[in-house]
Length: 172
Image (cartoon, rainbow, N blue to C red; front, side):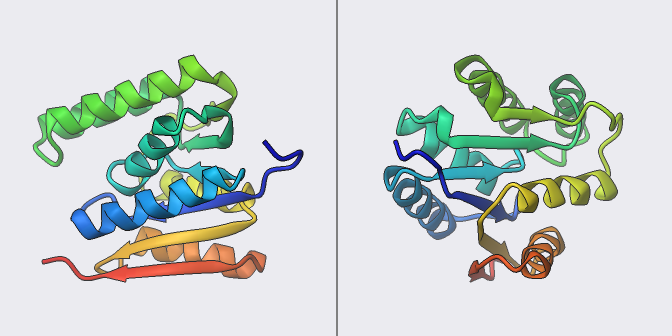
């Protein structure tokens, strides 16, 4: 591994995805980590999950930073509640929680928990987006259906002056 990693923020839609989005995420992340660089995500479903999974498939957890908007226990409780509400599936919630626990076990420094936020809402998620951008040298964004959260991250990266590579998709 190189002395100093170049960190690539990954931002993407959590609500909608398809095989093309997943292929683009996995191909991009694989190239980044095999080139000796690191990935920064926000620990959410779909794009963040796929990016993290690809880093783990390459057995490179030291090349991963995940910024959570809360602590892992609060985050886990939130996702389980969202599954009970029917917004996501129970399998999605449990797979995500399991993945984050695996990351924490393999490389505890990879999982950065926000100790001060006690709730999850748009404000704390957007705050998390800022953390992802602040830890990144470049941003790779996978924006589905003009996602506002992804746009927030893109805007913050542009203000910071870091390069942004944008993949745009429309999914019905």
